[in-house]
Amino acid sequence: MIPVQPRSPEVYLNLNVRGMGPSATLAINERSRQLQDEGKAVCRLGLGQSPFPVPEHVRESLARNAHQKDYLAVKGLPALRSAIVDWVRRTEGLDYAPANVLVGPGTKELMFLVQLVYYGDLVIPTPSWVSYAPQASIIGRPIKWLRTRPTTGLGVEPDALEELCAQDPDRPRLLILNSPSNPTGLAYTAEQLQGVAEVLRKYRVLALSDEIYSGTHFDDAHVSLARYYPEGTIISNGLSKWCGAGGWRLGFFVFPSTLAWLADAMAAVASETFTSTSAPLQHAAVSAFEDRPEMREYLDHSRRILAELAGHAYRTLSAAGAVLSPASGGFYLFPRFEAHRARLEARGIADGDTLCARMLDEIGVATLPGSSFGRPPSELSLRLAYVDFDGDTALEHARDEVIDEAFVRRYCPRVTDGIERMAEWAAG
Ligand code: GLU
Image 1 (cartoon, rainbow, N blue to C red):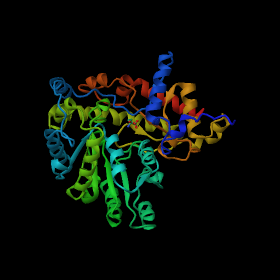
Image 2: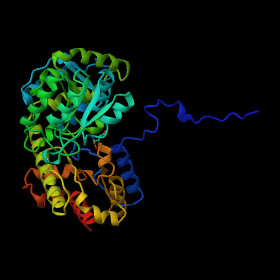
Image 3: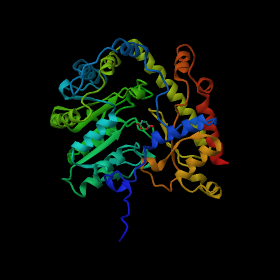
Image 4: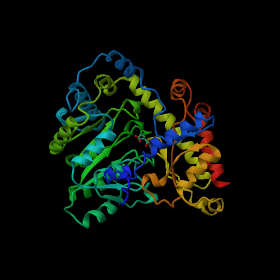
């Protein structure tokens, strides 16, 4: 008799999920925590989490709303949707209907839903945030990576988009444009967005404008792609980054009336999956969108601290021969160490994954390789998130001290030391 071979449980997994590991951002966070628990000093430049506390008035609002226990409307609490629409009008000068706002448990979940509901190829520049492409793979959507150029900050270029769309003009596509960008820190100018918008309109491409870092724009000069392509753009934003509340998990999409059908379809799927977003959080979030002096002060100080850190990191890494663009917002930089290739290869480091693994082992600095963002694995690139500091203390001192290099050395020493160690280590 032929013995029946037991099957590995793996064969019962959805083929799109088979072989998939945890998201790179969450994996590096776990690994850093584990090393710290083992007593090792780790400079945590891996996960991009805001270092700043949730503003006090928003925390107080959450405490006042702890009793809110009812399931809320699928699209979100009406008062929150109105507050979001008012905020978009105030910050972008664009008008939307509260009925076309969809609140979700983080924009990551809403991004997954839009890819599920909309039938189109995912179009993203290389490099792009770690989860856009895996979400498309889980759903089974083709992924088209747009070529980019270092001279324009590795962002979406109209000619690259035109070249892709012209190959099959009627094919449905979803472009995700992230500004300020994770992982490069690039904030697109109005002119750049206009150029991209023209191509999007010509080929009727659906655009998702990921603006989660909008409030961190160093010059408070964020511009939405929706200003230039309002009829085809969904705005995506939330509390995770500029409001310091990543772990709260609250994000939203705002749709133009031309895309109300898509908002309704996503809400239908939301009603069959997450039902509605946490009630206390939605009630609390209303206060984050109000025009208050304490919020303006919080944002202003946060931006100036981040800008100074970005400047220090840019100068230190450039001086050591790394190639990178200066950041205009967010908390990331994306240096390439190709100029160090010969010396790194002599030390057995010939690709981005090894670069990051060895940097973590040898000098305790955690970052993520460029391959997690869609760059060729052989490229000696990485993303660093300059967030490993006590944001409470830094904000406290930002009130009455000058924010300069000495300030960030004093209040963000793990970041400034970590960057300096990285520069020395790569060049050495
Ligand atoms: N957006 C953050 C990052 O890129 C982390 C959040 C996440 O990946 O869910 O590091």
